[in-house]
Length: 250
Image (cartoon, rainbow, N blue to C red; front, side, top):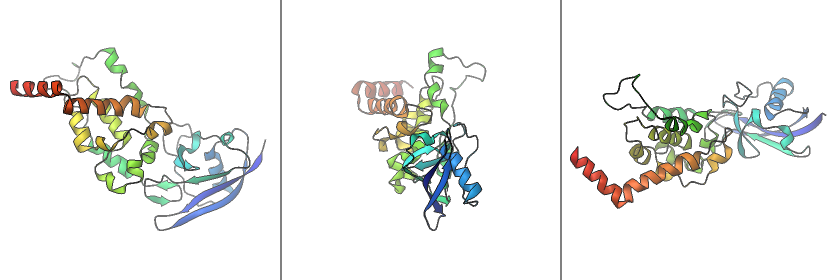
């Protein structure tokens, strides 16, 4: 079944832009990315959009659809009614390059700031030993496709540009939590998270988990446990005393 859908697509660049109205054919079973491609083919050949796999695994086609961060390739047109006007805009948390393409280099800069896995002294590659439960515990976090929808919807980044210097965002705080769960990682990830990457800014609204296309429970399984470990270390008197004793012995 084919019908005409009303679309409003943001057109512009870093200097200026506005929403532009389109009426476009929609076929049964299509996703929003199909419609954007049809607009490129029939009405707006210079419309810029970033995409790659069209299978929800590359994370390239992130945008906002009716104000909600989504993947264009995973948002079915059947989600909307035929009478509904569908608005497609670029990710609001990042600078616009052109049309639906944004500059997400902020995220790669934050990734570079996180030190990689640090094995304990005296343990050579090939000598690492882990229990299966330790392997499985952070496995969920490795499903991340780096679409940056969680970074976009996080209000600490989205609404406060000044926070970007000191806040890594949910995607990279999740990475730190993953490393902190690794039984062989020797680096003090809890200190890093709190003092270097702004864990304290997160107020666990769970908006990052809500938009994750891989359904990773970022808040419940990564950020909250990390915040609890940091709080225990800082405020639990027994943990504090133990840290002092072990430091003295060392």
